[in-house]
Image (cartoon, rainbow, N blue to C red; front, side, top):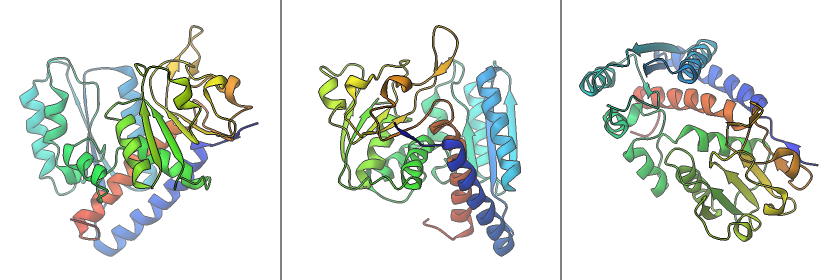
Length: 287
């Protein structure tokens, strides 16, 4: 029977550390970490996500600003706002909530955010630093996965990590995070031919493909550690991951639940990155 990696507990413990460090930074420098969230349109899921971030900022003693813009906001108006926030000294992290309306190019928005305020870790400068193993702001979900594995003392060094998924938000940066920890990394995806021999070779299997309960027990090695990043609704409306939890739980050594696994870590690491960005601004960290 798998041991459950409780993302809610790890997030709570990490948040305590963020609260302590935020207080220390304020007492030492007078700087309060500030996060600005930009939301365009009325997507219910995005609204909930932004609200949760605001609440989390409040718990951690951080400054939070929200910019809720109408659907018809132009690309130039968004880029202008981002530019204003780039030079705002009370804001250390800028979050552009995705997805954006179709008439706005998300790549332009991501690249407009200053790399030192890119708390999502999506800017090409930060992804480039990640690939080169240099300090930078790391994409929140892969960062959260690393934090989860470390919390449960799961060895990464020398292990074979298979990442199923190649997105710029999770799959690619997760592979880079694991590679920087001296794992042997294989990236696969839904178009990979003969996937099963690849996934069954994994000591640590990270799955982020958006396909409900795709990974079954015959695709998992005995004793593997499984990190399920997927959040889907099945035919009954229940939230499930990309891994069939009930099918694999007797085979895996460690397993993340959905919900309550990787998800809570994503917001927590966003706050961690905001704190890190404020420390950079204070001159405490790398330039």
